Image 1 (cartoon, rainbow, N blue to C red):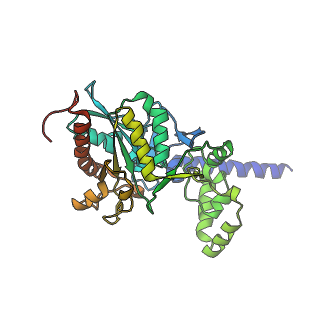
Image 2 (image 1 turned 180 degrees about the horizontal axis):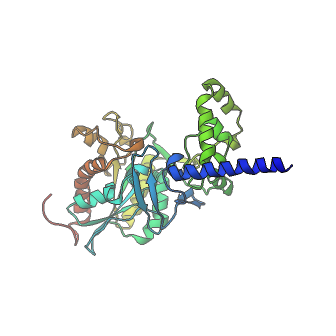
Image 3 (image 1 turned 120 degrees about the vertical axis):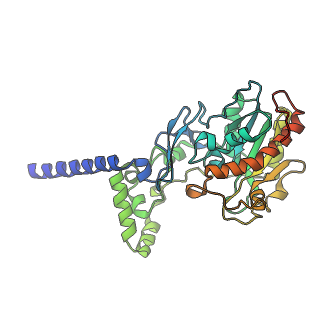
Length: 360
């Protein structure tokens, strides 16, 4: 009996030592392919999760493409750009997911901060984009968590197209159940999990909390023949599979045109201008957003930044991991976007106090 107890204790000690060694060699964030240090996410009844206010940590890619500090404001958004002018016009960037959020770059290299440097008008740029949030979720997050603190002169609604053009948006964002929130947080506190094979999935939370279990699962996924892996994957019950990062919104939808019209009506009633910006995507044809342009309401200012970069010969802009904009790409986007923002402010504000008067 004592021998068995000693054996079990020895195995556990060995596992603990191996886990400790792996933790010293490489961080869990990088080893497991997480995008952020653990602790950035918090539960949220509206979306399932959102970012923790006052967070200070890292954005770190598993391929060592970057290792960037990240600091969020008290509501969980990226910090606004700096301005010495007390009467600077406030411009809010809504939507655009992790592309507008600026995954992998410091504050000063994000599109909003670059635009704040490039506009003629003295502006303070607020970034309401959140990774994984569609345009409607981003709008709700802005209205609930940022709008009470900001009096914007302009809201830039950014749309980034991943796959097929979507001309419908959810009619509402229903509350996320506690059960769905539990599923989101089951595997790892940071929610964003590695691409999981069936063995990693079978090991459940262990594979996303301990590096040793994660590496053993990945090894098994790598050596087992693909056909057997596929068979195993089909046999796993749904409750064992990693959840979606964002719970899907089911229910009634509304046309994109109606959604944009509704937003414009709300903003205009508050004296705020609005424009739509289509964000560029690398290795996509020039007319990527052609299916969406007819769904923008008449009279609404819209700039197709994807097409603009193509026309300027900058379609091969530099990117970081997963196609996210490198600082030079954000710079090119800002130079195309800033004059359009200046033009909107010129018309909407009639050269309001605090604007720079010199020609562009």
